[in-house]
Length: 247
Image 1 (tube, rainbow, N blue to C red):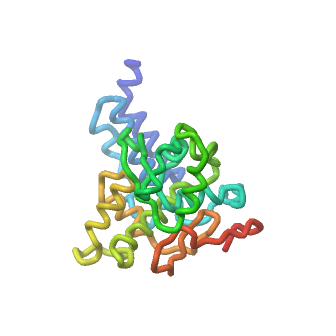
Image 2 (image 1 turned 60 degrees about the vertical axis):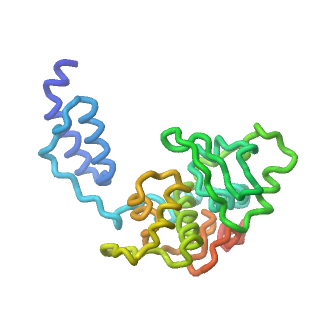
Image 3 (image 1 turned 90 degrees about the vertical axis):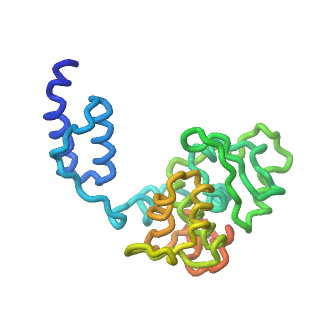
């Protein structure tokens, strides 16, 4: 181990340069360098390596149809997709959700162990009252709401749609502009903070950058996405066609 420590700078630099050559994303490279610095206890490790800039338009995750979408049959998961679009839960959060965590009267879902182990209450978007009743009625409080979450379901994209719908509902205005520097009048900061809280985020800037200021896309109803032209956000906008996965 002492020999590895002695060559830490050389090894870390070579590893990062290799990652740049192979096309790793700027976010992956930055995370990797931070992890190497933590491991070797050197905050200046590989400082000579200039990482590619992190720009929002380079983000590929959940920004359109991907190969894994073709492996998902939406007809089998309509209730789950609708629920996630209406609550914005993470994959692990919905997997751990119990029937007792559904508060139908208040229209909220209790997340007992969110990111960092922090609990939160997520408001449920309107339009899924009947679904919540079906998921709750006649079941034991300790029973899991959903027995299985398909690995190919793009949960992150559904969280993004939830964030945008909730922002529109709370602010009664359109999303902040996708490009350029934000002015104070460009967003409803109280609504942004409420969305961040609902998603379980502490950093409002992250929610603005990755959820609310995302570029408009053609929406694929296989992911339970909301119509971009719908002024009133409801959770039943997409009527899924089992044969095509589209409305």
